[in-house]
Length: 304
View (cartoon, rainbow, N blue to C red):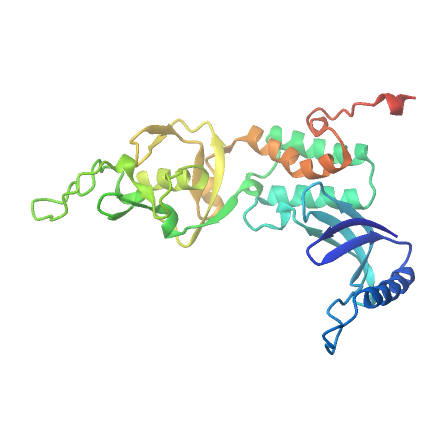
């Protein structure tokens, strides 16, 4: 029995069979009770070992709490068919694109099913080329985010007045444009505003896309939105804090048809294929750049 991985209150060991694992649990528990007696006379010994799952295959990443495998036995029952599971990989996040989910999940399944590097690499290379050549549905690249009011709020550090980024595009000073009846005359430049958490505001990706829509007079957003990195948009939006004109690289919308007239940044999204495969390639000592070329460099050991 060999320990191959562990985290928090779990360990993963390499063992021949479920029966062997069950026998080993009993032996280990007896040893624990012998060396660490229940001196407090608790109803149950404070250390309890439980055999939860048996994997027919398990892949372990180089990063903590990152693994994937095929479970064939769970909680005392043999499964009708192997169940794929993964922990610590970004494919489980709701905030990643469908392309990222599909590519990483399929590559992980191939990995834990002992597919050879050439098979995995051929699959990833074909997806990479398809994306790079613009042969993939652009809606697979859409990334969803919550439209949280706090992410669009900034605050004057002199008087603590709060503003929405939507409202200060034409504002240069705090309290400006309030008219003669206005009582707020702070005069602090908006370029010095910070977020509510007292950080320098960061405007990029989806937020930049929202600002571009607002400045075009489009305001059909609700509690969430999707955004896309694009190319070939010959337009600018204004950074509401610095007043700089910025090239449009992201657009945001609510439904798929909002992106019909835009061309994705195919190169950017093709590189996501490599990014999602990187944890597997690092674990195996493979060269991730082979996904771009489709060629696997043969080592001297393999030649001989």
